[in-house]
Image (cartoon, rainbow, N blue to C red; front, side):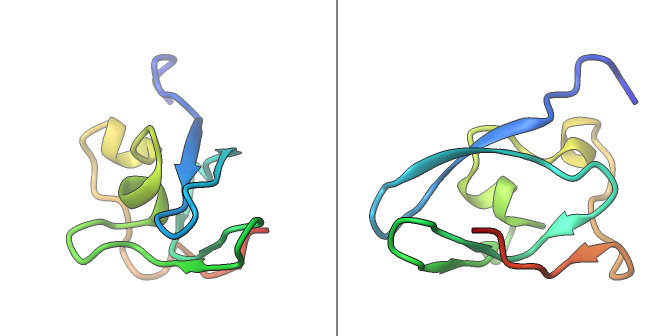
Length: 81
């Protein structure tokens, strides 16, 4: 992995604007994220591969490296709270 890859991203909830810094998975996409403040379940926007690309301050590691993010077998469907 490139040493210039950023592994933390600040997710901002579009509902309540609560922000939290989270560590991004390097080998999977995170499709769901539950805001710990208002409990809104965030999902990627249609053009994005994961919640970090949609709501984070930094895009996910594969996108930072100009690589494809998700192939379908590397999806992290877990809720994050």
